Image (cartoon, helix red, strand yellow):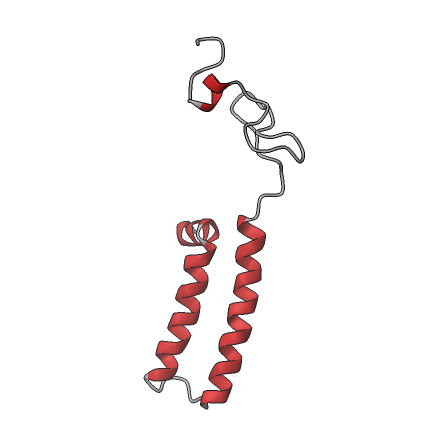
Amino acid sequence: MKVMRRALHEPVALSATVVGGLNVAAAFGMLHLTSEQLSVLNVAMASALGFLARTVVTPVVRPRDRHRRPLAAHGAAPGADLPATALAGARPGTA
């Protein structure tokens, strides 16, 4: 169970391990595939696992700071609406 939880937090490492393991198994003769079949299988695995990785790591919520304020206004440059002390890492109200 701990391995699956870790795999979901590192989807790119999981996909690289799966594709790499598949290629190693084919190289050592454990899978009897032609080079064309292995190529198609690599493309299919990379596409499927890439899609999985993207759905896991792509943020679907606008990022906010620890005070729940948006980090940037919609369409604004990051940090454009923050005072200089906030950009330097100072806590609000302690400048």
